[in-house]
Amino acid sequence: MSLDIIGPEAEALLDWITLTEAFEAGHRLPRAEVADTFLYRGKDTLLTRSAWISGLGLAIKAATIMPGNAEAGLPTVNGVVNLINDNTGLLEALVDFALVTKWKTAGDSLLAARRLARPEAREILICGAGKVAASMIEAYRAVFPQARFTIWNRTAVTAEALAARIGARAEPDLETAVRGAEIIACTTMATAPYLRGEWLSPGTHLDLIGAYRPDMREVDDTALRRARIFCDSRATTIAHIGEFKDPIARGVISEADIVADYYDIEAGLFTRKSSDEITLCKNGGGAHLDLICAQYILQMWRLKNR
Image (cartoon, rainbow, N blue to C red):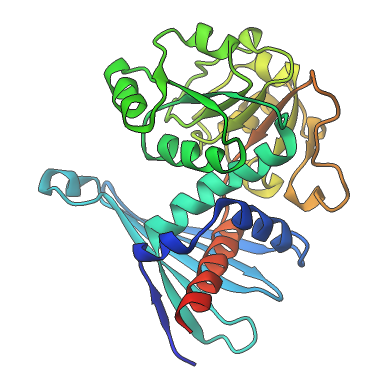
């Protein structure tokens, strides 16, 4: 078996809609086994995320986080995704870390939006102006081609720069931006809620992407109380991410308030019930999504090159 080495050039072969279909197909297979490990040296970190889905394969996503690289003009996060054959245990492919991370993260939230946002939605607000914000705009445009994008960021000049680059408009007042939005993607590194639930209009869908640690949140308790709540994976969100862990611990919501995750799609539970309800989905990531995404990239690569 030959080893495929897939770099960023494979991006031209990928499509956002077929990726979301791959995510759905992956969740019809047996439930994934996942595990994370962390090794530390001062401020440096080695993170490995592993997943095994019977019938699909195995993945080990290894990442180094070296904050000191910034001073040398080097990327602070680097890594690779190892894809291993489900039947033989042989290494099949090495896939570019940044490519998998970009498409996994944005595709994850795009799947939620395809199922929970109103199809006629046109006004999309992006909170944040970094790489994830830019990739969410790219992903949303595949499903909502007539959408108008608004960018809000704590640093206004950064929002203005992204807006100019992708043909959107920047809005310095968050309340104004939220009240006019039909889909909202939160992509910041906030450790305290900045988006207030009282600002949300009926029918809004929220994709919560940025918070990934127990001490991080992007929306307040009111937003959670007003919304029907979903997530990509209960296993990677409830006990690990502040967006759920904190309000559950304080009795604001309970685990039972999380209506469904992607393993409930086939049962028809991961869906909007009415046009005026507010829906909220927490994107927690997870190694099984890296596996599904990397396998999708490998399939597209082999269709082109074999």
